Image 1: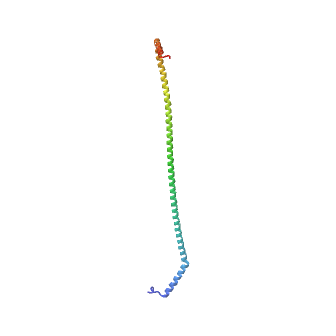
Image 2: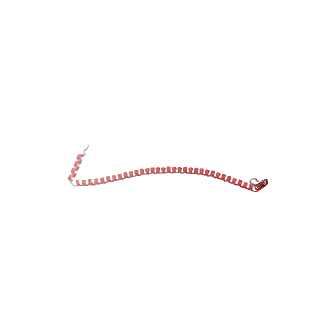
Image 3: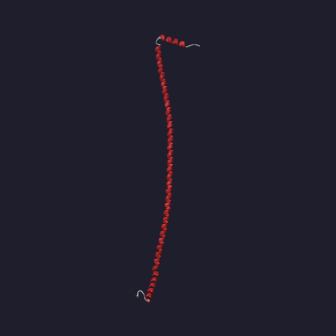
Length: 164
């Protein structure tokens, strides 16, 4: 039972040893331990603040990326819209040019057909006239071979001619 109820001397020496131990620890150990704990606390706070700054930077970069993406989409839409308008404009110009050129070619062909038709008609008329003259010449030669037929023709013509 000595250990459960210690004697006064034991308590005295235990207290003195404890006091010396506290003094030695306070003088040599607690300052470096507290300094290490403070340093660790500061490094944790610094890491937390850097993490927070990194988080804010990531949020800012994400926002900027979204803005850039929106701008890129808007520019793409604008470029596509302009390209479509240009395509439509080129197609309409090509159609208009084709219509004008087609009309001009049709008119030119119509004039050429009319010219060829007029030339063909003139040629036909010349051939008919030549043929008619040849036929008339042959008929007249045949009729004037006989003197009696010539006299009768002159008489008939004179009957038809009336003097006024």
